[in-house]
Length: 372
Image (cartoon, rainbow, N blue to C red; front, side, top):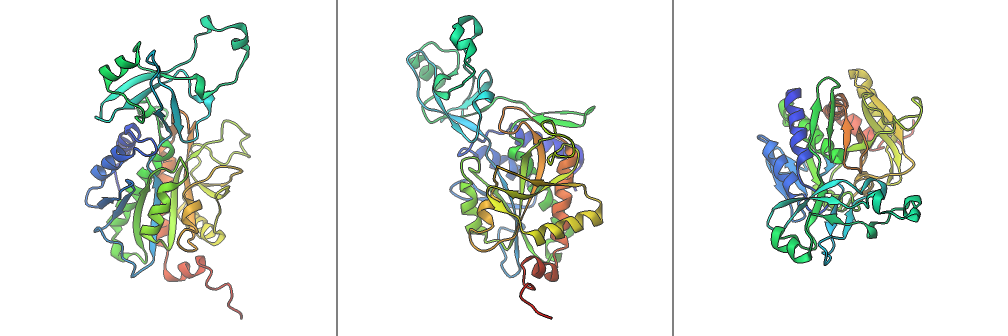
């Protein structure tokens, strides 16, 4: 078990890493650097696989631990004559969260350049513009302080196609016991895989009735594309999807909220991408109740995760979605609580270590057609 202080330091490393959708290589390098004796291997898309020894043993059921590597970001579309740069979104941004924030552009040479997403100062707005609250991405640009297209190219080497991430530095407030940073959706999930695999390694992979495999998927924010590859490669029999789930505790009444900070791991029953396996959820809740792990149940009207791909990509795979509630996901800045991360890891470890053949058969529904 990793020391709590060290675990939060690892979240800092992962949160600060550059990794918009399609450009996750820095994140996989950071994870591999933290993996200790666990074996890491990437594919051509930069999906990352974590195993005990570099092999996936299908002699026993494979239990896949999934989290996505990418964060919501942007991409430079072109460079105007005045040096301003139109951009496109990578992932599900709302325009209200985009203007007037600083960002980091990474060039093809690896150079990182700070810019600002434009917002017209009120001093220059017409009365009509002041009254109009609509925001269109086509009217916003990234500004790096240059005055011409050539200056942008000559000074910084920025070109169309360069990726962009929010400019946010992680911090941990000890008094409030709260983490602040970017990309908690889903770097907290990546941290959960890493720590779960470590704890299972300490117990002994050979003592388990399943074969744990960590699968860090790319491009989830643009359509769960990486999971379509990891599902085929891993061929799981069971899976847990870790997510940095949107916290709703500041928007709805206390008894309605299903993603509250400091109330434990979130178990997702439904979203637009999948309906959960009720036997898997029942088993997970029983394990949590037995071990005193705090959890909260969530039924989502929208949203989706890699579970939508994993549960039916290669076979009928029971998938458990475990969320760490994070405030303000899909914006520059996030909050999350360390105790919820711990609850998610503990839940995963207990689910996997208790998954004996009888429980596996129950979750897979092998007794449904049996008659007395």
